[in-house]
Length: 286
Image 1: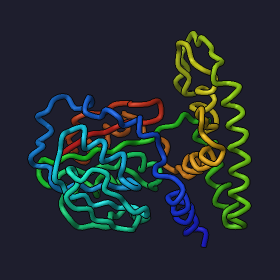
Image 2: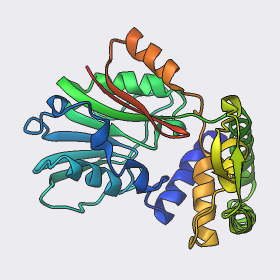
Image 3: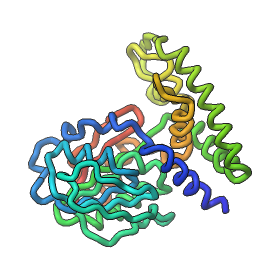
Image 4: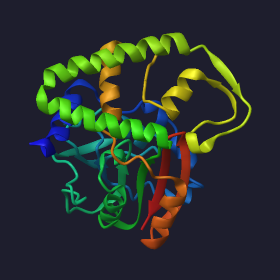
């Protein structure tokens, strides 16, 4: 019973929200390609999207490259939609998640695989990445990002994951009310801290604290506890995004760890960038 609870929560969140991350994070991925020789646009006809929800963000990303008439296969509990008919010729939906053994529920071959804002929910993101490599056509690309949290915040998220699963098993409706209560705290913290700044003289990277002028809310959110807030967001919206955060189980993937894995498994790293303080974007090929 307990093992099925995360999927129950994912399905609930999928009905309430379109994605776990702000699409702004992926607004300009083209700049992370060293040059266009890695983008054989005419070759890209079949695209696999893992955990993309409605695939709105992924279609915006594909539009950055001027790709048209492609076939998209989406693997997610959430049904995808076509947002641009010039871009998408055919849309396939596999209503399944990555298995506990990191197996991908498709045997097709693809010219491009996109897995963004999703690997944090896998038990072993590296196994998933390797299995995705096996689905690539020759000289094709994977866009895959990894989550990295400082140790105190990581411990907070680990605790909140256990709390969320335990409470949901007892009473899911009461758990939703408790999430709303946490969201209210988060919203008020954001209101009081959003304009307060500090000039941090030295970096403390092991805690996720960096030098320069920083706003207090970001320090609390990025380094200690995921109290997320955004101007204009409702308490309900904040509760959903907090739940997405609490469901993260793979939060310890820094650039050094990713590079070593790619070397070991003979994945060609085209680009590896820290696109935000908690996200490392890997662009690789087989």
